[in-house]
Every structure is written in C-alpha cells, then in structure tokens.
Image (cartoon, rainbow, N blue to C red; front, side, top):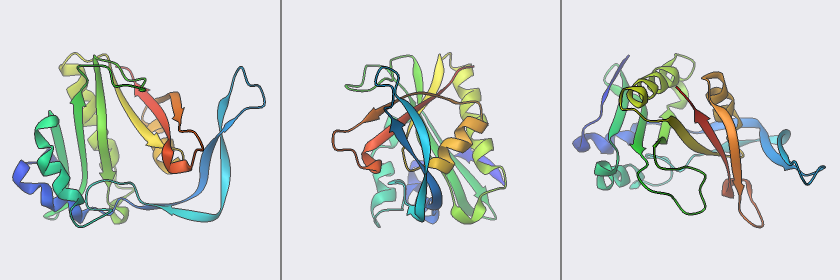
Length: 188
C-alpha cells in the first residue's frame, strides 16, 4: 500500500471506495444536568448501516464533486493497494470563520477521510491521518479539526484512538442523527 497525492484527473476513481459501515452504537446528548450536557453512547438496535455522503457513496456523480472542488484543498491523498484506491483524505487550511462553526482560522480542516469497507484493519486510515498530521505540523497550523456525525460511532472511536479529542458538538433543531455533528481536534 502506498500513500500518494491524488491528481485532479483521478477524482473519478474515488468512486472505488465504499466508505459505509455498520454500527451498533451511536451518540446522543445527555441533558440530565442542563448546565453541563455531555455526549453518551447508546445502543442502536437493530444495528444501522451508515453511508457517509462522500466520494462515490451517495450518487454516481458524487466523486466528481471533488474534481470540481479540487482547488479548495491543499492536500489530497490517496491510499492505493494493488492499483486500486482503497482510501483517501482531503484537507484545507481555514482562512476565515465559518458561520455557526467552532472551527477557526489557523486550523487545518480534515474535510474528508475514508477507507474502503473491505480494506479496513490494515492501518490505511492511520497512515492517512499520520500524513495529514505531519503536513499540519510542517505548515505551522495550530491543530487538525474535523466534523463527524452522531451515528458515526466507529469513526469517532478511531479518531479518539489516533489522539483526537471531542471538543464540542453542534445540534440542529429537531435533530436527526445525520444533522448532529461532533467536533474533534488534534493538537501537535
């Protein structure tokens, strides 16, 4: 497996990645103490399949969105194994405030990361994140940040194992899991 920069002409190949997963746990906010709400895990019964809205996962044209937005990212990585793209990550430095968002200028936003469902457990996500972290440090950014959904429990568990911390969350009124986001950060 190799980690390399992805060229703009290769964005259509992102559709090779199946980023879906099945989870038996999700997050919710516990309000027993309204002055200190906190995240707790809850069982998902039955387990649910989660399909992050990235790369080729939601429509045949989704991967090409990254071709159209390619210039927004200053780091676009592909993990390739045997000639097939099995993982990818794209990142960008934040240069302005994003309304209703905790992320601030100076942060390095991990916009998207995914590892193919069949290729998990081989260290691909860890290697992609290691490359992102090194790039962050070398470019003088204060931290790496990302947003992920309340029902992406396995992803959050992975990020926590890689040194990220939960730094907050955003809940949409009348929240459905896909509209609630957890904010995670990693500081060098």
